[in-house]
Length: 82
View 1 (cartoon, helix red, strand yellow):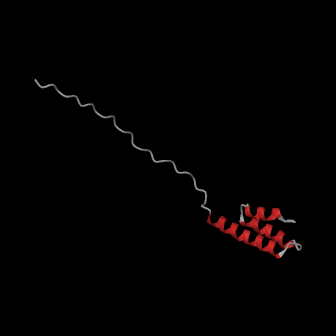
View 2: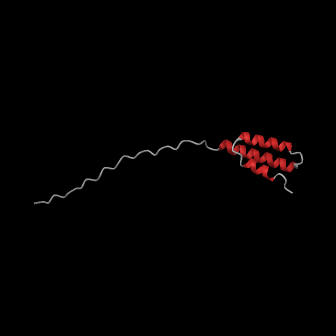
View 3: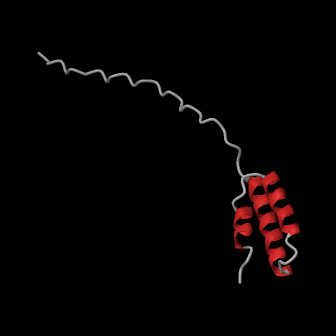
C-alpha cells in the first residue's frame, strides 16, 4: 500500500528550493518508509531543484518597437501629350 504518495507530488510541484528542503526534512522523519521510497523522494527533489535553477527569470515584457508610419503613395498623373 502506498502510504506516502502525496509527499513525492509535493516535492515535484514545489515552487522554491527552501520548500523542497522542508519537505525532505519531513521525509527524514518517516522511519517506516522503504529505502526505495526514500530514494524516489531524493531523486525527485534533485530533479526539481535542477528545474528551478534553469527556469528563465521572469522579465518585464518589452514594448514592441514602433514602426514608422508609411507615407501615403503619391498618385502619379499622366500628363496628356498634345
